[in-house]
Image 1: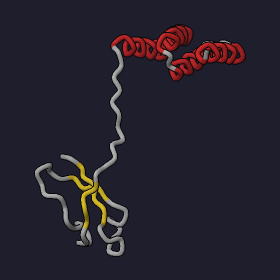
Image 2: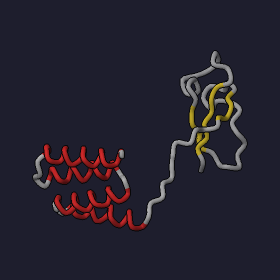
Image 3: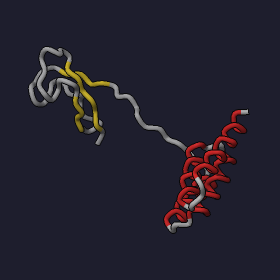
Length: 127
């Protein structure tokens, strides 16, 4: 069942439930509420802001992310780092690049060397 949002029509006539608005689950065919279920004051239905996004990724990208996760689960940090680093360069994904650097550190590589590597790649990407 859908969840609908309601707010009071008159802010001077509210209860604790409807004062700042509330959500109410009801059947899609039900008429909208006209009154707060707790205090009986007049309310109106509010159009909600959509806070979700659908992101589609390629099957290749999904497969590589699963492989990286598999390497990480097995503690194969250098394998995970190399795969993440290579794929991050190909798709220009900074979050994946940071994941690669994190895995390099777990594999025992020097943080200073990794920082230089990240800066070099960022400078190249900016050109």
